[in-house]
Image (cartoon, rainbow, N blue to C red; front, side, top):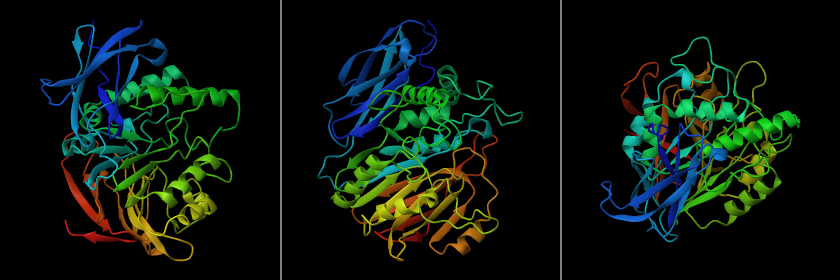
Length: 433
């Protein structure tokens, strides 16, 4: 049969003793067996785990293999076989043990509208071979195909059905650089709005039509991501934490599914997050989520505070900040430009730092960066290049480099470090690169 592994392979949700392995078979209509292997070397001379998974049509022939019994903080290699065809090999890495002081090397990416450009930044990210990759939302865009674009996405119409979302993910996964980034390291993804519909909140208008659309989008998201849990009753459990020794608690947040007029997170997620922020014994409390977190006043016509960001929920943001005194880091995306700044409470106390990734390919809005910086002294950096974040969390500091490419309208752009910042627990400072 034709090669069924055209969408590549991936791993994710790393724990000290295991990971999730993912692939999705294409070109099939019936269930199929998929053999998987995990090895200590990239030549698969030392296979240590193997088995057979069943790819079912009801889940778009996606496979999510839970591998356990691995060593902490260790690189492994994996691959799949089905119908006589062998998949590409992927590299994954387990998280360190609970007492580890080993630094964590991570990357963060977001906002990758297919029609807007090439995913060259992902190729450079893959070459860095980080310990873990965080995706900060807008993995796909649900819009109909525009009349003009750098490249053509499928299907042509706006995605609203399970078949449409599945086809849209397949179109995105046709990009070899995106597949390379998935194969290079384990991912921990969160979603924003475009995985369902632009600027949707919670249950939308509450109609059966919207809830069917949301359920379809959530299922397709699961079918294309290396997640540990399946959708259930039209929802999908997305908020969770991934702990790296005593260095960092990466708390992945869901800012869409439970959102309402007076909440970004919903009551249960907020209670979970506040308790963890207050009690975690690790050095860094890291929020992994899509939306601009700290206050950002935009000069000019109203509204000067963007309600789709955390500026739309200042009371809930204040409750989160009340749970920490320092060592808070927020990794954000969404706005298609890069920003960095201090996180300051309403009382004027600096408790952490925020790093906002620009976009892998999505076009930037017209933004008066210098004007916004002047109106917000706690914001220290603005840049409009496409790119990603590359960072290291250690026992002494938290460093983030803004990595950028000069163009995405054609292939082959080199990457460079645009700026690098470090925090030791409160505000940020720029370092020479």
